[in-house]
Amino acid sequence: MTTTGRRRALGQHFLRDPGVTRAIVDVASLTPADLCVEIGPGEGALTFRLAQHAGRLLALEVDEALIAALRPRLASLPHVELRHADARRFEYTTLPALRPSPGGRVVVVGNLPYSVSKPILERLVEARTAISEIVLTLQKEVAERVAAAPGGKRYGALSVLTQLYCEARVAMTIPPGAFRPSPKVDSAVLHLKVLPAPRVSVADEGNFARVVKAAFGQRRKNLANALAGGLGAPVLMARQWLLDAGIDPVRRGETLSLEEFSRLNSFACPDPDGKMKGLKR
Picture 1 (cartoon, one colour):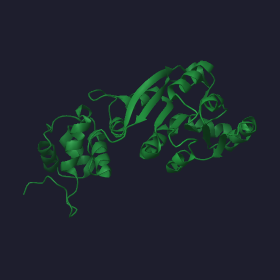
Picture 2: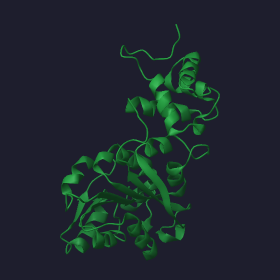
Picture 3: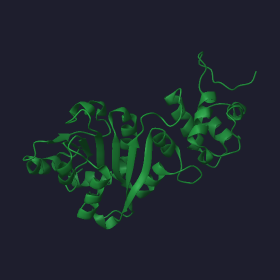
Picture 4: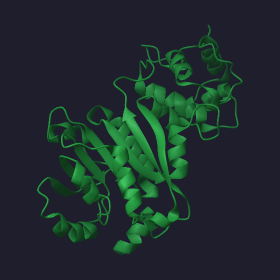
C-alpha cells in the first residue's frame, strides 16, 4: 500500500485553515512551562503554532514519509522533537520528566485520524496520571459521545469511562472545508481536563469498565438483561445487583449517572473467593 493509500485507510485529513489552528492553540492555553505532545503533526499546520507557545514540543508521527518532509522544517527549533511513534502504543508515563519546568503541565494535542481516534483516546485516559489536559480534533459524533450527559442516545460507555476521570467539553465544531482532503462529516475539538481524583469511588476499575460496557452492550434491552448478557450472569443475579444498588432493573444504561454506576459496581464485582456478588441463597 502506498503512503497515500495508508493515509486514506486511516481516515487522515490534514488541517489547512489557519483560523482553526489558532483556535485549537487557544483551547490548549500553552505556556513556556508546559510540555506539549502533538499526536500526528502531519504536514505541520498546527505544529508550528504549538511551538510558538509551548516550552517544549514533542511531536509523535507514525508516517515515515511525513516525518522526512517535516523534520528539515523543524530543524531550527531546538525545543521541538519529532519522533517516529505510534500514539496507540506510546509510553505516556515518561512525559512528566520531559517538562521544561516541574510546575508545568503535560498537554496532549492532536488531529486524530478517524479510524484510530477511539483507541488513542482510551490510551490517553489510561495514562491520565501523566497528563494534565487533552485537546483532540475528532469526528464530531465521537466528541459529542465523549462529552454527552446521561439520558441521551449519545451517552454510552465512552462517555462514562472518560468522564469518570476527566472534565469533558466540546470546545468547537470544525467544518469539512478546514481539512485537506475534506471529510464527509463535521469534526469537533474535544477538550479534556484530567481531574485530581475520579468523580466517584471505584473499588475495582477493571470490573467497573466491564460493568459499564455490559450495560451499554445491548442498548435495546433493560439493564438486568444487558448486564446478564454482557457479564455472563443469570438474569436473576443481575436483577439482584441492581436492586441492591437501588436501581430499577428495567431502566436502560443510558439513564444511569456515574454515581449509580459506582453503586452498581460495588455489588456486581467478584467476591474474594472469585464468585460474583448478588446471588441470593
